[in-house]
Length: 108
Image (tube, rainbow, N blue to C red; front, side, top):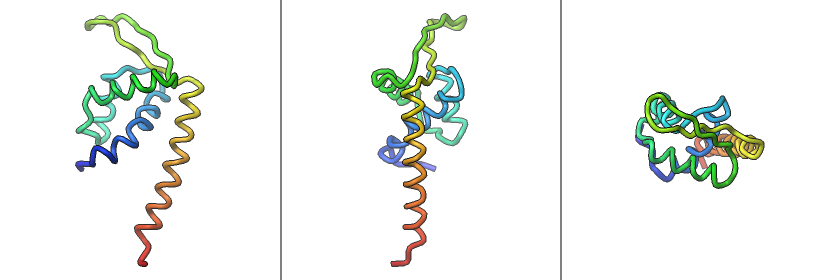
């Protein structure tokens, strides 16, 4: 399903944080995960922009590691601030989902 860029933009950061929360990962792996889970339109450039923003806001710990397949990769891990931000994201998601479900069923 094609989802509007603006709508997707609001949730992608939370989805990326969720993926990082499962363990150390890098940009291509996150992109592949998103593509494999129904977000086929998400490209690496979008993910790297999100990762740079997460790094700038100090929500992740970054470590460069050598790769046998090419240049060094940046690996991302969630830190305490990232965990707090992710928890807040899921609280907001639960609220919005509940409100949208109410609106969808509202006949007024």
